[in-house]
Image (cartoon, rainbow, N blue to C red; front, side, top):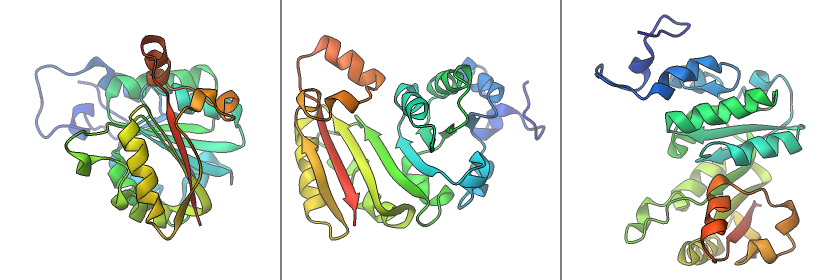
Length: 232
C-alpha cells in the first residue's frame, strides 16, 4: 500500500477503515507535492503563514470549489504577481488541476483538499485578498445549504482584507437575485458590479471561463450571471 512522506498510508487521510477498492487518483496525489496538499494538519499549519509557503508577499486569492482547476490555473498564468489557493474535494479533479499547474511550471498556485466551510481553520485574519465562487449548487428547495450565505460572510469578515472582493458566477437566476438581496442587507459589504449577462457585458473580455461555463455555453442558450462584492 502506498505511503506518504510521513510513512502513513494514503487511505488513512480520508477513511476510518481500509476499503477493498480505492479511487486511483487518490494515490496520484502524492506525485504533486509542490501543487497539491491533502494532509489537514499540514494545511492548517500554514494558517497565517501562506506567504511563507509561496515564498513571497504577494496577495492571496482563494477559489472555493475549483473543479479540475482550469479557472485558477489560467488566473495564475495571467497574474504571476498573485498567489492562488484552490479548494476541491474530488481526487480526480485535484490531480488534474495539480497536473496542469506542474505542466505549466507555475509556482503561484496550490490545490488543497478542503471544504469551503473550514476556511477559518487554515486562513488567518486579513490573509486573503479575493475569493472566487463559480457555479455552486443552487440547492433548489434546500437553499439553507448554499455556500453563499450569511455564515460565509461571517467567515469572510475574518479572512478577507479590507477592500477585498468576493467574485460570484452562476447560471441560476434566483441564486443571483438572492445573493444581491443578501448583500444589500449586510453592513460590511456592497455590490460594486453585477450583470445578468456576463458574456455580453463590459467584463466579457476579461472573463476567464470555468470548465462548467464552457460546457454550459456550448449546450444551452442561457445567460451567465456575475457579481462582484466588496468588503468595506
